[in-house]
Length: 287
Image (tube, rainbow, N blue to C red; front, side, top):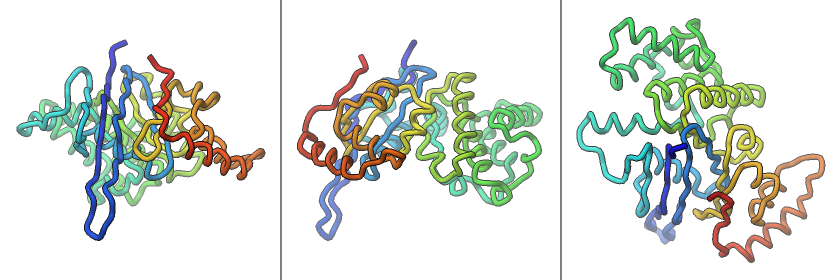
């Protein structure tokens, strides 16, 4: 199966700020391959570089080094002209943690989707756009009953479904979700995760799922990349990494999740072990 997304040597350093703050390397030579219809989880603690990596994939941050290739097209160079920029935007879309911030409060759900189609599908007639809106609403489980609603009239889960529908409206090859369910109730999380799995099966879109919640990652991803301070410390099939971690930092993350057998002293021990071995090269079980 051909790769939908290839990242090679992605590096990003934010320069020092006035007042003595040191430069921060948010990503250091990160690389992976994601097949069409595949799903990758980016996990790690806050500040590990997950969101910076996600932003480089969709083009919201420019890497200092390395390349991103989507469907065989190198995204290293800036798009010139409106048509090229729109074509580039269609390759990869991003869904953020707070859907309310990405939705125009003045627009109804239908208007928001029509606005996307107007920019990216000018060939559609009014009737064609209306049909496409209905299809998108059905795909994300909202239906026409919510078409006339504005963001403040929707629940958090419904707003996230609208954000996903807007991203899918351009038929992207890659959909990046940055903590897209972390602010939702557990029952709503389950609905959104089931929706994403269904969309992936039906459309063949590839997912990059940024999350600190390993249970969420286990539910929706085929492979996982574990990050710490901008570095990849482990990368492999999700089942292998989460069930048989090879790096002490991954084991520490797994042990940090509260549960019946939670042992805080074990977490502290693993953190100490990791501190002593953190300069080891990243371990990958993927070819």
